[in-house]
Image (cartoon, rainbow, N blue to C red; front, side):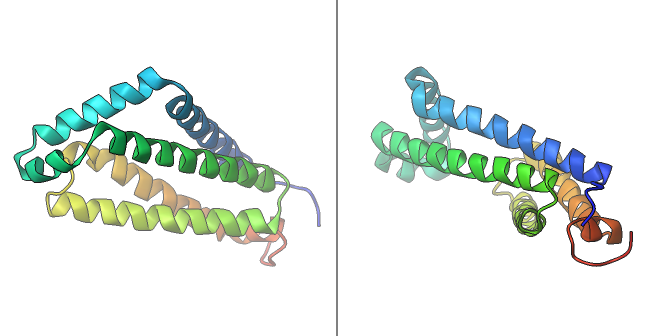
Length: 162
């Protein structure tokens, strides 16, 4: 297989490195910097306490429970950040597993974006997230479309035309 990597694959790998690296940094900060944890926990408790629809849940949630869920989320962020860095490397090296992994991740992004849009429609998410959700959805659909282009598939050894 030739090593003529399409420019779009290089851009995808760069985006993967950027977002995964950013996610790793944020997750590590959440895991290691207690004042950062405290700020997020305090803001979350305040938000829930001020929402009448969540008044009953606010009584059950303790700062320790928030901290445990925050640390779990940070651990998951580190895990997925490392997976994302691996995917970026695989994209640069034109590995089939990276194409498949990126495809799977983008399908999950599309499903998450659609779920978020449903949340906007039924009012369970704030309208301010609409532009973020639409951007995520459009970007993921474009990446999926790009991955199925013949020259891209061929670069990863899946057949198709150059």
